[in-house]
Length: 156
Image (cartoon, helix red, strand yellow):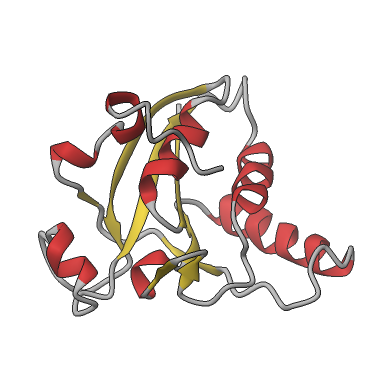
């Protein structure tokens, strides 16, 4: 098994989308990329922690490749929006790939170069590609949110 971590706006829909991929064996929402230890949802939303809402997933690389996960990641959100996704505004909603290995970093940078060269967007991709720092699991009520609240459904 391997680990991947992505931030693409509100983590509820991002988690649901990744959980539907064959080969993704587990997902967890949480906070990463900031400087505050043991952040709470309220603190992250208050913009003082520097953390992003993110999804950490475990996957079987024999079933799904990291490149496949990157394609899904870039397709599920607008990577040209700085510190926002749709109506959600703030640094906690930034687009980021938190890489765990040098290979993940290389693949993420290659993907951004390819998407940019293909003209996938008229604006530049602003997705951060940074080493995966310490992970802080979000509160239980955020885990598998759309599974527990299906009437809201996935936004993607």
